[in-house]
Length: 237
Ligand code: DC
Image (cartoon, rainbow, N blue to C red; front, side, top):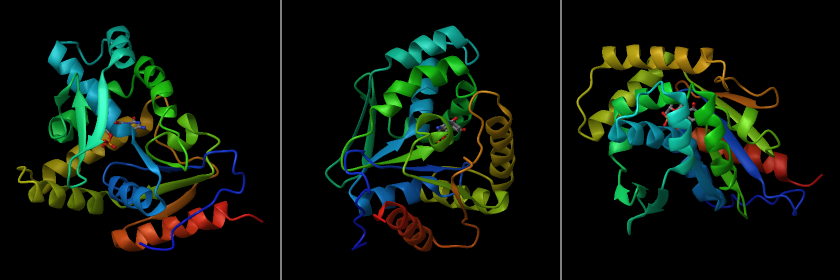
């Protein structure tokens, strides 16, 4: 995508674009494309919760043991990078866990540990350290409300539950992962419920976020709209 450059109105402040929304709203794809078009760094905050959950499983820590999970989240040895083809890679304790954190089990486990304030607090500083010039795209559930409340641009993506389950189904099939649409719909509904109803940083649109419903809209069109919003917000005057 060309001509996407966006200069902040205040050059001394590194601009942050927060994109929040429920599972399957297309956030991951949209954030990656927006970060690439803008030349900004990307924070996949969901991956951090998935890493905590995976590490807990590996170490035999119960997913409701808040103090132990908080300590675990604080000390996790995590590294993000990419391979020669530009595909993202994630390491935990020096081991490649790129695929392991993307399973439905890891996602459901992540939603459980993400409900714990001890874990959320432990990950706050780590998330904020992703901010670096020329800008950051932050993908998550509470990016605009809690982690980056002063972000220059905030967007909240939604899509109908049916559409989200359909997208997830397609993604998993493409990766060769077995899944049924009915089970995915049920899991998405359960995860939404847990993410929306938790007391610690629930999934909610920030008052100052732009709402974008992506139901029936192509990824390219959503990315174009996101980039337009960024340019509108960051252009001086
Ligand atoms: O976006 P994802 O599917 O990778 O996120 C996995 C889980 O992590 C999701 O169920 C909710 C949780 N999460 C969160 O609570 N806060 C975030 N900023 C990102 C993810």
